[in-house]
Picture (cartoon, rainbow, N blue to C red):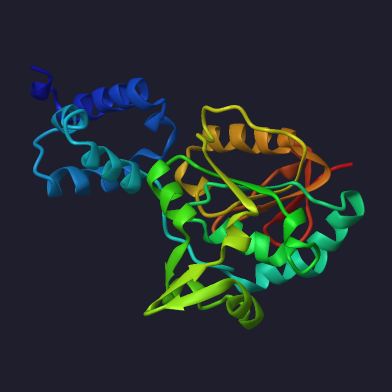
Length: 264
């Protein structure tokens, strides 16, 4: 029985099994952080080994969904770090509008939808809603389903500008429902940043506060593919805990803090 494996062998086998089942390669994530998060879930659910934990996935779909939630980073809010969104509104979007009257945007690792909906609301200051179409992707179908519902706690909307809160949200008790007008601007899809093909021709890619969980090799591959997915002059917007130390190797140049532009 595989459960007699030593702890390191047990986790290595789990990594292999998960990759076969889902295409998700846990070896490309930083092991200490990932293993700590998964250990906590495994022990909390009462499994003696990672292989036992994996074996339960087939008979317990809810456990598999919980595993995906645990390994993906689903902490988000609208207009997170508002000063960075001011840069997007005041500098980046006006530049992009000169290249394309209807910028093609992608919110990668979008979690429960706060980020792509924030982009759509910001774009509504430049375009009619019917002209706004953006892609939002995540590894976890469960959070995509929640994003498509678009119902949020009060804490998530605390930084939404008052005009957008008034125009695009309905208060329901202690929660806020985003309008169908904004929801129609966003196409949600499941996507694995480490394994799936990237679309191309984007004017803006936003991917914040997820890359820190990947190995350096995985990050290099993702930055390369992000650059290839951008049009010349397009922007990559990353998180406050992340930095590209040699953007030129990806054909990018640093502009504002956490913003990188593809060289033209």
